[in-house]
Length: 100
Image 1 (tube, rainbow, N blue to C red):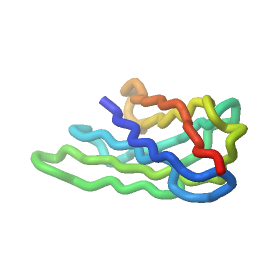
Image 2 (cartoon, helix red, strand yellow):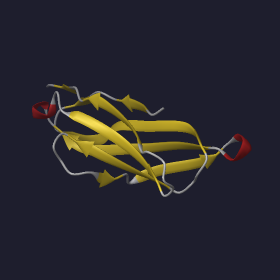
Image 3 (cartoon, helix red, strand yellow):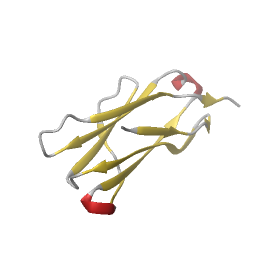
């Protein structure tokens, strides 16, 4: 299961928009990609993969970008992909931008 923790940010600012986390995976060979609205998928620039009990890993990826009120209602999707033949995991949230 992927959990997408979103934040509400002020208009016309740049900063962390969301964190994507999951746990219990059995591989460290992981790539996290983000899709914002209709934009193409892009790799996460901040990715933390930490080994926890019995060889499983915890994954946390952060997504940052500039947004404006025009971005309200756009979807933000976190997609966790593996080098092994497992189905990618994903989580989606709707972006809410606070106006001035």
